Length: 522
Image (cartoon, rainbow, N blue to C red):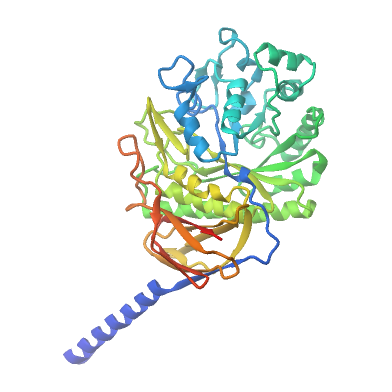
């Protein structure tokens, strides 16, 4: 222990300590993060399909979520809630994945077509053992995608299905000429085919899709891919890819599937603290928050390492990385009777969304599609419903802010992030991506995951001919805040006006746990 011999010495020491601490503290808060945007590198397009979504037959995602039936008192289009259609259109939703997930490998598509009275029921063995009546099927889904202007992404059943079943589905959806399946489609009141491009050959084959070895799945994939009709050469076939850091799975697929048979390899990663104890969706601690952010930041490492394997076998990058399941996953309140895997959506989820989308943007040379899990009432949903009520979540607002990146040219960013420190561990506090749209608008998205520290940032855009800058922010008073049916606008996008733009530099301060996007016009 430090000791002094007199009262005056003690007073001097205390004053020295306070002044010194104040100076150090000011330096910490005054530290400026310099961000350089490089426009000299040949730009890569951020594929709009990175902003895709996922709808599985799970809980209240489809039934009593997206689909309420034609006879519902709620305004609907062929049984689909009109308010959901409107909300998804505002996101410029580029694609939607269906019917699973685990459900895909138990789903037989012919059970969901034809007159409702003739459709058999199905027991959803994966999610609660509920009985479904198959009233929502291929026509409902593909017509919804058509209404949204979104590409459908169909997950094929290779677990309990057959090669013929999947090839018939492709023919039913895509063949324009005379054939048994196209004629069946016409009997069901659809003349023109939908021309479905994206097809998943199984889902999580290493787990619920069959508990297969990678080597066995390769042979199954090659068999199914061989027989899937591709008369126009337009099918985009996606292999069931790895779970998180299962790099051997990617290695085996890339090495053993001929690349002319393979357009995409999937990757699944959820921001889960612990699969046996996922933590609360709203009542989480600072420690649980930090661990969730660790898992979210892990996406950067996963993409780098899976991409390195793909580069070894496919240096020309003809095969895309498809992150078709991602998002936060928690234990919902057990007393809520709102469907399986229903969870609330806090500012924590907004940060997960912003961070991951920045990661995908910055790896747009290989990542060409991603699907947030899931679209309505399940996991990190963008929309929650209860009877006639509808809530747009913080995650929804991030997707809305970020939609300007869709099909824009990637602008490389260079900066040293300050650390978000929790006890003896640390993470990068900042996540940033930037793009230039076809109408020459510059878009810069910034996420600060630190729970306590503001970040003072200066962005150098002198190489860009920007005349005006506007900003939007998503933030809240507490990281546990969320929107609910009684207070649907608790968290919403607001203008961010505390920005200074002068001589080619953007200067601003981003508060703790916030998402900001800047839009500059030339």
